Image (cartoon, rainbow, N blue to C red; front, side, top):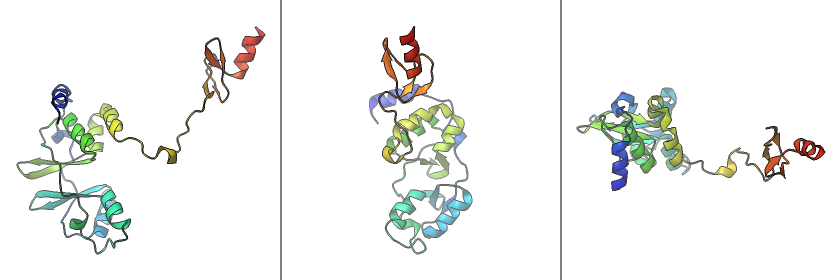
Length: 196
């Protein structure tokens, strides 16, 4: 963490602690669970990640993306592949006393959406971006800044072409705006201006 980031963190406080927003009883699995059972558990629990726990300690996390990218896309059998073969092991964790803003900065910088909450080596819960937004929806801009829209050409976003937009006189949408006295106007308003 850079010095200026530490200064920003010290000034940006939400007043809410991670412990206020976290999911207190995250869905957990053992490292020996097969990934088909994990997928079923995710579906039944309506979650996108499971904490891999051993002796009340979080030793990893398995997400939907892990299953898709490391197993399904590789042609492996989810019924015979164990969690330990696909889970993320290098966990980034946070204390329940940390401020929500600090948690969000960590998520942003590490490009993760799930953050195990640990106190004295014992897992207390799991913090997700959804958990943060339930308490502090105004932090949405910080999330969007990092998790940019990828593959924009495949998204159904209509980009305005030149000469398309709202008329500065009537406010109506037009596909063919024309410049008139320093503003862009639709054909109807252009005709009115010419006929005055």
